[in-house]
Length: 65
Image 1 (spheres, rainbow, N blue to C red):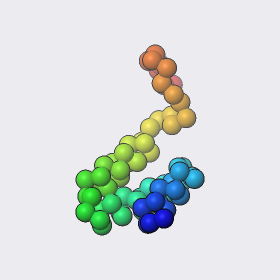
Image 2: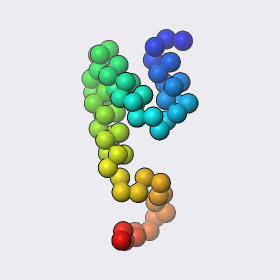
Image 3: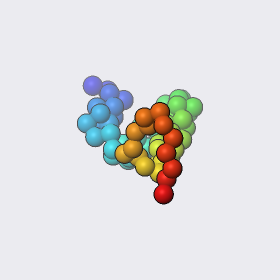
């Protein structure tokens, strides 16, 4: 396995570990894939700002108390 495969395997094993995602973003940026690295950082940041990360959308709008 190469470095990228190892990083992806670690993320699959524990996708909630934020550090692994950031390491992948760093690696992408260092290996001439700056846009994907930045997109990954922004996506993870967006996920971190969600009000109810465990909630799933069922097609209905609900008020948050």
